[in-house]
Structure formats: C-alpha cells, structure tokens
Length: 296
Image (cartoon, rainbow, N blue to C red; front, side, top):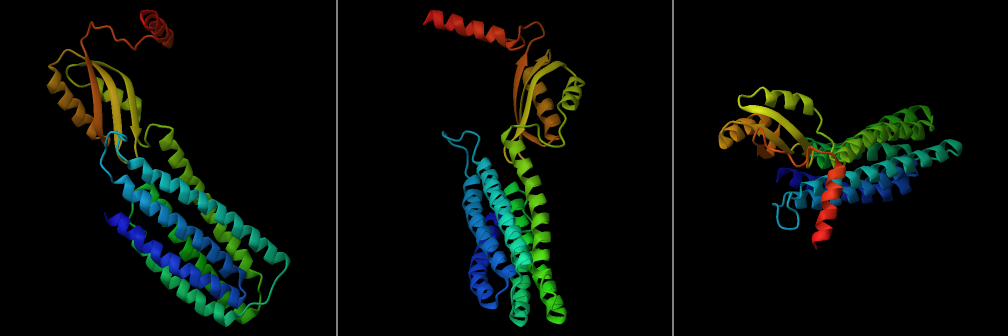
C-alpha cells in the first residue's frame, strides 16, 4: 500500500511543479527549464499511469486473471520507461538547437527557479526511493532524473551568472539526458525479459535440478519451468520421478524451492516405471492431435 501512496505523492508534486515550471521557463527564457518542464509533464503523466497500474497490480487473482494482476505493475514500468526515452530525445534535440542558436536568459530568475526545483524534486525522489517493483524503479528513475536535471540547471545558472558562458545550459542538459537514456534502456530490458518468461535472474535451472536430485527419494526431475510475474514472485512447475511417499516429498521439494525465492510450485509426481507423456518430442503431440480429430 505504501508504494501506491508514494507514487501518488510524487505524481501530485510533479504535476503542480511542472506546470509552474513551464510558465516560468518561458518567462525567463531558459530552454533548459522549458525542456525540463516538458520532461516533467511527461513524467507526471507516466507516474499517473503507474499509480493506477500499481494499484491494479495488487488485486487478488480471479477468473479472468488466474495468475493475479502483478504484471500490470510491469506494464506501468514499460510505459514510464518509453516516455522517458522519448523525453530524453526531445531534450537532446532542443539542446542541440540551442547550441546552434544561443538565446538571452534571465540568470537571476533561473537561479531562484533552480533552487526551488532541486528542493521540490528532492522531496519527490525521497518519497519514491524505497520501491522494489520494476514500476517503482521506473518512477524512481524519473525522480532521480528530475533532481539531477535541476542540480544541473542550478550549477549552470551559477556558472552563467558569473561568466556569461551560456552554452553550458544546453550542454549539461544533453549530459543528463544521455545518462537517463542508458538507465531507461536497462530497465526496459528487465521488463522485456519478464514478458518473455525468461528464467529469473540469479536462478540456475540446472543447479536447482541437481539439488533436487540429491534429495532422498527423488530419482529424477524434468520439465522444469521457472518464471516470474513481476521480478520477485517466482513460480515453478516440474515433473518429479520419486519412489517416496508423495506428500512428504512435496513438502521437502517446496522447502528447497523456497530457498530460491520460488513461492509457488506446481509439482507433478511420477512413479519410477511410469511413462511420462511429455518426454517424447513434439511429433508425437501432433499425431495424438490427429487421433483426436478422427474420433470427433
């Protein structure tokens, strides 16, 4: 519940501030501030989306979503990250235009603005810094970016105030954007891995198989599938060949799996001499399909 409230606080702070900033930036004539405002409005929008998706992701499983709603949080992360990437490109483009054609800036206004910016965004970042979901990480990245962006504007404003070297404004905003871009790409890769049902990071299937086979009463393990809903709830299904008493062996295996962060395991138990229907290759599947068709 805490995550959601934090996302909401961050959203409101961001939205109010970015509108204030947009008007101010135009007034002062700093493209760094205007482009930052555009960025912030995009941030606020994506955080709003994240908030609703994070809320939805907490719902309990039901008939339509038998696995629960955890992936909605992950979708929030994708949307947020894409907006970030787009925003970074817009800022870089604006900054390059600025380097080509420098303009006049009201430095004092910019200084005051930058100080307010750092304070407000630091508060927002502080509220969102303790999330673990990928969605939270994406929101957090936005917040971090905003703080960085403002620290940069502040430093730039101070430098320009005393040296009149106005190119530093766009050059620094390019630097921040590149940093954010790289981080956003990493975040996106993690999310895509989840949707591809890749084995969660830090889990080695062959190692699990080896450890399970060492347990008393386990003769063999096959068809191991391990995936994650949201980056920390891991699921597993597998076939276990065993000659031990079934419910005892299940307990032992589930305990072993929980050491790997697998909280939900579906185990299919087989006798030693039982024929496993799925061990054969896919051609066999197709043939059985044909038989079914003939019967109908």
